Image (tube, rainbow, N blue to C red):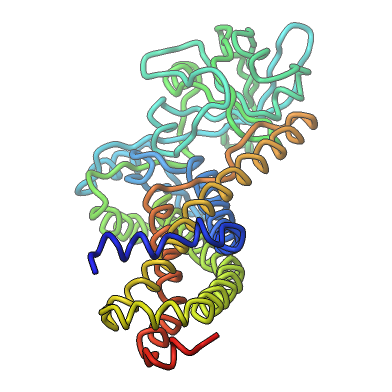
Length: 399
């Protein structure tokens, strides 16, 4: 018997028992779709979190802060940071308290004087507008909370608005600490809005501030290194200086580990649905064996070998499993798109931003289809072995 004839016989269930065949495929596809839906949700959540913090430059930088009142980050210390081996750049940040005016409205805020490179190294991305660049003066970047403080309808409404800034500078004298109010001489334009719904803060170009206010102490510094292999040696250098060090790469690693566990848990829940579906498929193949017992006897009497009978049943079960995987992927993707659409509609109704909750990696989708085909194959092993072992005379007498 030719292989083409065997394959034609193994797919005739679509003609002889179409309803039962498609119901079996649907059962497999529901389990496959459940696995894809849940794991794609895990991938989507992972992407949402990591997109906020993953930048190439940010992953090759360290955040250095002081955790001791006796160890301060002076300009001289910043120079030492630059001299550390494999360090390519240092972006210090100075903090001031102060007030900001736009029109007749004023409000208190925290002001961060930082170079433009600080945004890249800290992994800060704008929600609206564009961050100021090196050499650009007269621009500021504000947090979401500043929008509420000044009554802006949304982030885009704040872009391009002019603001006046006044900072408070603490000077240590023989009579104690004195607070000096310094009006920054120029008006600033809001160029971007960044995430920060709780705290009102503003980023200013460091050269603009340092030209007016002498900066003796920095609160933080983002230190860029030449390669990922340099992160640990540089970190040890700063720790030995007495500073506290953290990096986004550590945060990303921890986040990936957490999401790997979440994806496994979600996948296990989906696997239970796939297991139930495979039981239904096993039952279908067993019933098919009983229905074709007499037919198997005829085929054996005409010269079909045991291997050919086994191949016919295995091919049939594998085709059902493969089609169940394809239909299941379609169900999972459609359900994910519908669910994501519903979530975004609710978010838009309550003033939230749209998000993509589901991610369907091509490799994972192909693996799901392959697993479904494999489950179909395994479900047909036992019935195919029984079919191959049937005695031709006994099979011909079976009614």
